Structure formats: C-alpha cells, structure tokens
Image 1 (cartoon, one colour):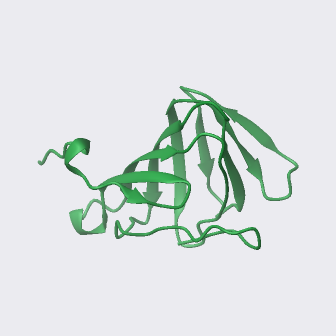
Image 2: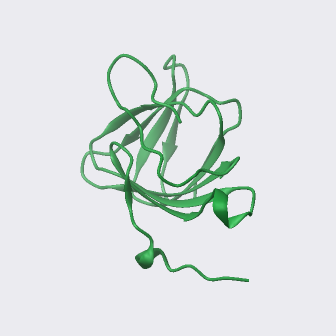
Image 3: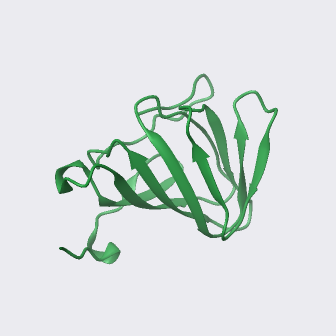
Length: 125
C-alpha cells in the first residue's frame, strides 16, 4: 500500500493544460491515473494510439467531439467519456472556466509525456 498526495506531484504541461500523473508505469499497477486540467477556451486535437483512456469530469464544463465532427458529448461534473477505440477527438474547455478531469490510461504512461498541438494533425503519445 502507498499514498500519493497530488499537491506533491509535479504538474506536466501537456499542451493546453496540466496533468498530475498520480500513478505511472514505474508504480507497477498496470494503468495511469492523472488529475488533468484543460485551460478555459482551448481546443485540443488528440488521439492516443498506444493507450486507451477514460476521463471523468470533476469540474468545469466543455465537450468532446469525434474527429469528423459527427458526434459531440457535453462534459460537466459527473460525466465519464471513454476512448475505447484509440479515437481521434477534439477536447474543448468552455471559454470561461477550466475543465477538470480524472483520466485513466491503459497501458500506463511513463509520466513525462506531452502533446505537440498544431492545426495539422491529432497529437498522440
């Protein structure tokens, strides 16, 4: 058993916000848990080709949209979204407040990964 306090975990700048990776690969649990902040007013083009991800909204509001724009889900506290097919997607935080998520990755992250966000492709790691 061990305990980790998020205030003692260095926040990684991932592109349009920060992520405190509370569990990482070296912890040997087989998955990562991260406390993720998405900055207000940002839109991120993301895809995890090597990881599956589930995100549970604990604060703020925004939306997640499929890469082709056909499907959009509203995010608010209490909503979970799951990227179970390595889905390319847009993650958008509302203009006036940060979006706060608890993210779970499988397989686990090393812990230092960051996105390369641009308008030409979906960032991945």
